[in-house]
Image (cartoon, rainbow, N blue to C red):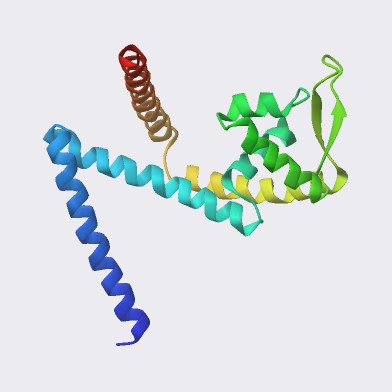
Length: 185
């Protein structure tokens, strides 16, 4: 057995042990009928995020950079850093760093906003449009293939479940924040 094979087997055993520990922890805090599905859902979400991160890295981007590029490329209205930040729920400073990098690479230019002289709208340069078209067409093909692995009904059900889960989680976060504000002197 090679060292790589031994390392892979050891990693798989370690991961299985950690997954078992996580499932035990979930059982202690979540009703038993939800512990395994909850852990599985969390793992699926993390795998999805890791896949997008891996794809972004192939193109010298972060996931947030990929999302920002997508918005600038397909927005039907002029985009500002503030609007992109609100749309993607990413801090404005992070979007600012992404835009600065895009400008340095020659992908994005800023133009004065027609509606607000203080704001700058973001537009793709010719090089940025070519880069984004290449990246986003490759992404679109990956997503199309992945989506076709399920029926439309299965995808719609998955979206419903994810939305219900996300909405409930957001309500829980809001309650935690409200409770914290109530206790703060």
